[in-house]
Length: 278
Image (cartoon, rainbow, N blue to C red):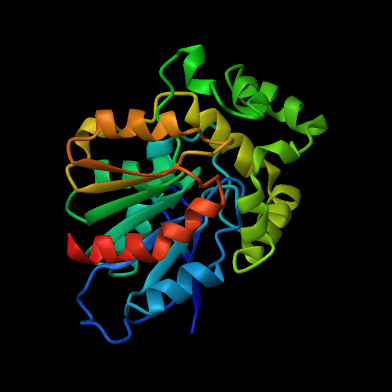
């Protein structure tokens, strides 16, 4: 059974956290999995994320980042700011240890949580995760549609203006991606559409945060990290995974050559197994 908590943050804002509850078939003190959602998403738990965890006796908590899913907006937030919110929420909920998993735009936030809270995070998985912006044009190479991120270089107002007329580029996804969205991960697509319509400011804040300093360094992530990247990804290309592993003290790259941005999520069950072994 899933619970929703509206957690009070130190500055008076609220962070919404979805929680599958107590562990099933595992010791109650075993680390939970904290799911850091993509951009845009509501933060609501997705069926494949929950099912793969439940099969392994794992609890899943999914925070909605500021500006998404009922969490109070925080315009100008950095990646580290959002990660700090999650750390406060986990403390408030009495979670003593966790694994951080981030998909797409959730990847930086999972890594930042690990960098800020080494006392809390035991292992990290990123799937199609974004690497820190290095100030070069090469960072955008291979993206089917880099308009939003390029607009974000001009700040929040520029990114908002871009979003007023932007349309999704259907070439961003591969045939394998569309097959996933038509099957077990259909809920992800539905949730992304809803989040984009109801909380557009969340995506704006994410994009601006990605092209600015994160406020947390990869070098400070001491936990082991599995970087899962699709070789055919047209949203966050494979070289982002290579950049991440280069900067991480204990990073391991799992390149899936045929996977795109969504189909790479098929690796999640095995990624959970990897986390349980660290």
